[in-house]
Image (cartoon, one colour):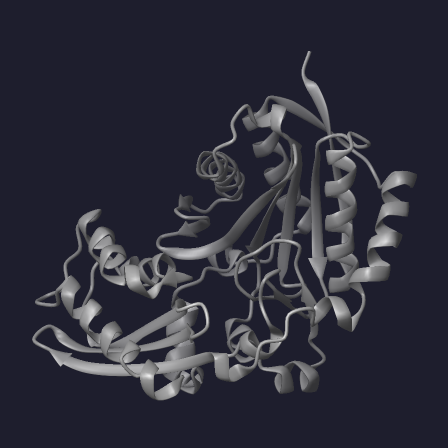
Length: 356
């Protein structure tokens, strides 16, 4: 007989409510007070910081304030993201024994492959893209991430349904040139909205049903609709007291000056390559970078994949990461070479002595 897991839909909520529910559900699963659970959720407009990030460094705070975008801090690490009701969130709260594996890379692949099959059932060719994205024809349709708390795992994902890329770009603190019409159009080409792919807006019930069926098949379980228990409600209310505060949101305060924006451009035989880098001078890490310019690369997804590969990278390991990236795939660049990307990044990083 198959095990029964719970599926719940907590609806459209404020960011503080959703993060407090993250804590409540994870603590309840860790304490074995709740069954393994699939949760669906949505956010009112929110900018979500990774647990170790500073709002001053990562977000355009003036824009968030003017547009009524709430700022919250996640329980998990990773980068800042924008979330609103044009995306559907899904989360799994599992026990280690459900997974029979402790390797996070293998767990990520297993869960993302299952989620991709659920999206495929809606009529689009979704595939897992390492490290933790799901794509359709090289365009990102879902980002994911997870973390263990003792023996309990919280694994989260988002599904873009009618996502506004431009608003995301304006919420995040990124180089001004990324907000040009051309840059915004380019960013839109890198993501895929489910509604655009299908030609209509699918109902949330249908999307949730397909994802639920895919996870049920993957883990060999059946899902039964449920709701928060009294214990989980108590845990939620206690978590909200801490999380719905400025002290929680701004627990890490690091000035913008510690996150330098470095830029460089160079004309190579294969074309003009320009790079903008968000650089953490205290940690000496490339937090994020963006390529632009006039060059040809096929497959088109290569640049987006390289940007993802170099996110949150130790600057001292730059050369190794870029060389390893290109060594692992076949790429047509019409005269552009891996060392050209290394060269332009190093040229931007050479400004560190001036900025710091």
